[in-house]
Length: 284
Ligand code: AMP
Image 1: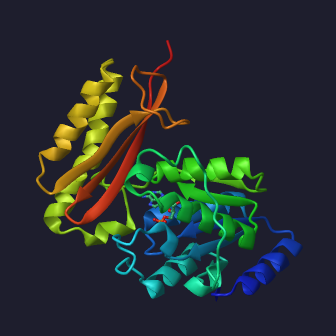
Image 2: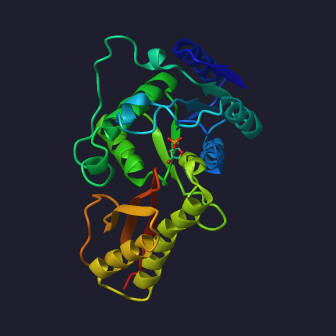
């Protein structure tokens, strides 16, 4: 496994891998790797024989009041995990490599970035799309893998790739959860044992919604209210949104449709967590 902080190095390694007839995959991450990230690597290896993992805590997707400074950076453990997983190339640039002085070009996706995460983190997606566009330009992979854990993010990236005709196939991988249902996240390490327990209410709320919908409940407003109530039983949890939306537009749905997705964001103590679940109703 080759590890580099340099764009030129990445280009050279990818060029020689492609020259050797290899199909190139890319898994962009912010590090603090867990089984969720590694599932993306595994999925990427199904499609590609040369996989580049990028590890970059992207400052432009954090607002000034967010956790950029304290975001976990266990770099040795991350490199070990990548080596064990059979990753070929790790690109871990510093800020200046990706944002040189006088950097002034941004990629924005206008519509689906507005609600939900966009409403709570107004500059977040501009940072995400800009850095992902840059990473895709640098690595030029055939395939790039993203997690369904960040539902609005993957929808935004798929939109960007379609709208800008970027020559890459985006693969979206299912959410990896702890055995009790908590969605794996690099931010889970911030949780105290009590908060960890309270955080389970996010996945439980989504489970409850799935059960209500499967049982034929059509009152989506009432189901959303039930999700909120379930989470608010825990004083540590402050719900930011708990909604059922259309998977393509991310607009809230008022009457059940065949395919929906429940999206939740909540503050658990000082830690902001998101989770989601797709709902597929049987077709009539
Ligand atoms: P991050 O390091 O949090 O920016 O995440 C990097 C990639 O890993 C993104 O595409 C995430 O959606 C994905 N990811 C994070 N957590 C999970 C998870 N629990 N299951 C699946 N994918 C995940």
